[in-house]
Length: 122
Image 1 (cartoon, helix red, strand yellow):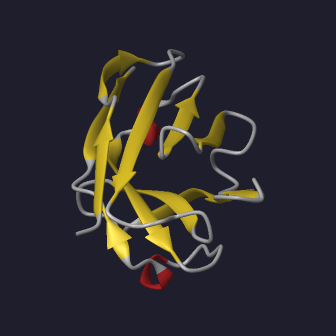
Image 2 (image 1 turned 180 degrees about the horizontal axis):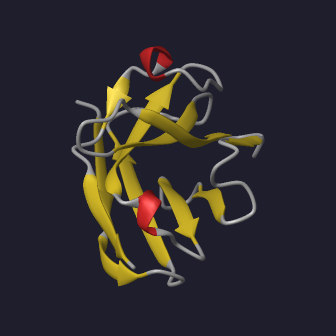
């Protein structure tokens, strides 16, 4: 059974940093891509970043480019999202997801975690 478990969310002030983690288990993800999405209350799910697990190829949403960094630790089967210079508009539930190929669309992703709340106060 595939499991994606996020952690690392919390309440921070604007300008602070957080690092989200997503521990993957239940299958081999080496050929997969992993993505982070977020959803704020009353808004649609939004693509944040994705990485090709084995190749390290990354893509980012324009809204986070230069502030967020996605990375993987293959030995730990874990994906990270380092978030710097956080803004109040980054407030959302952040989800980790797995897809057969690198993609921005949430419908491309097969596996999903339960989400972790990130709240940025002004």
